[in-house]
Length: 208
Ligand code: PRP
Ligand code: MN
Ligand code: MG
Image (tube, rainbow, N blue to C red; front, side, top):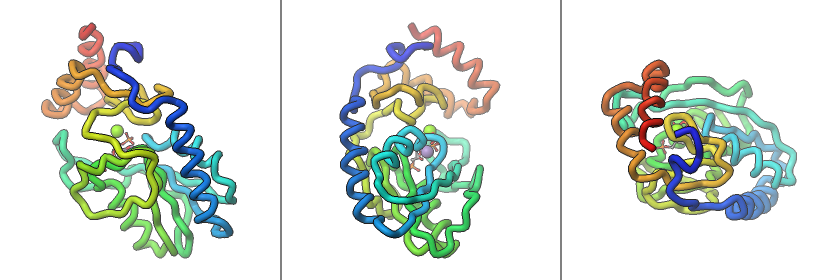
């Protein structure tokens, strides 16, 4: 599974669709953050592609920082615990903070980041995500801006990963159904460490 066609079933959001989302959201954010000098916080790693395109549609002076948080536990489904992998470098006290995400799913990651940033004294904390997987939400958290809702499909590309790969696909696609069992297997077997993932890649390569 070395090529995009090996894992993508069909395109869900094209490059043009995503560009339109960025233009629309960028305009809205330009209005809403005028004069506020917001701190834009990218949630590593999934948000980076969306962030670079979105911020280039924002005609408003802002600063940039990144945070990497991860939910941990042994399961495919989240355990409800989140930890900071790499913290912000910027003091958020009295700042208007805009978190950028590729996707909000259960809402757990976003709630953790919002609570953390609020606790540190930010003036405001909002989020702009490319995709909103609203049907999967299981914690109460507001998502102020998003590009599109998405159903409960395994989406890959434009930042969204499959086993931390294929983020660079320039559009959002749906994973081939026959690939998904391998993903579930990795998590269920607690193989999610780098050495095992490399072995697992060899397995994936045998799919086709
Ligand atoms: C993904 C995605 C969101 C989060 C959404 O990140 O990029 O940050 O999960 O899921 P949730 O709403 O259920 O918390 P992931 O933890 O896979 O890290 P990544 O961005 O590095 O892929
Ligand atoms: Mn993420
Ligand atoms: Mg991920």
